[in-house]
Length: 408
Image (cartoon, rainbow, N blue to C red; front, side, top):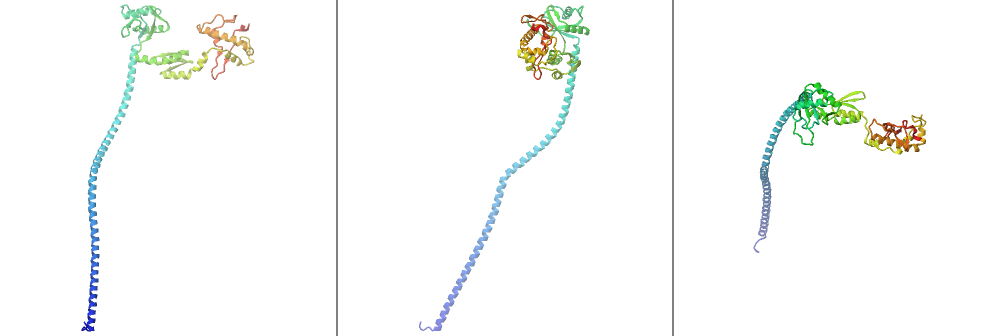
């Protein structure tokens, strides 16, 4: 070692340094190569990942599309079928509307025709009923003829003789009849009403004479009171019967009326002849034109006369009036009302009792008041003296016809 010169030693040293530097450079270059390769590997991995993700996304999209298509396909089929059904219904609805429109026009025409036919039918029925009743214009119905009265005779002969016997003032001999018979039906048992006789006169004039006489007189035959009516169809008789309620009201009011053929009511009111075609028209006339008392007022009028009522009526008399037929002024009655009222009450009560127990045109011969004989007065004269207290009216008591010697 000692034999090596310094120059050689420095060259070796430099050689080592150079080799070391070369190895370091080589190592550095290797490191750089490795880093470069690592970067390249990373870059390749990211690209591959993105590509793979894109690929997977496409696959997923295809799978999702296929899945959705497979799921929606049945629904689409159902929707298509429903659309076809709706279209079919729409077509049928349009056809139905068209048919309905045509049927509506036909229905309107049919209703018009039915209304016309109904009117014609009503007219024809009225004419038929009128013809039926006109064919019966010579007929009469007689009720209450006992069963078996014919005693084997021909009904026509029997009824003709019956009319001559019961209406001797009209028929001097049996009137000629075309036919006569009992109304159709089984013979009633004992105790039941007898069947009516239906008879047809040969001459209409005889029928009118018999019917008018029967309306004005009582028809008797073998102790039985016969009832005579015109022979009408069932429809007309029912129609005429609808006037019965208003006829009863008019009769109670004392208003004259007649039932005209076929079914019209003629009312004679205040000098006018009014004709009503329907019961409703007659009822309207009665309610509007004829005054009627309410139930309360009617009950009040039918109550017994009271002492307080007479006293009140006396006090309502106007003072200073001239005396009446009895010779006493109103002041006299006011002054002695306590004495007169009981006696007048007795007079009125007896007058009402007499009125209720006798006919309208009759009168008691004498009226006794507390054993004192006074002049006779008709019962209706007393009834007209007192105007009852009716709502919205002033009570008035007239004493002008009360007996003069009342206070003997």
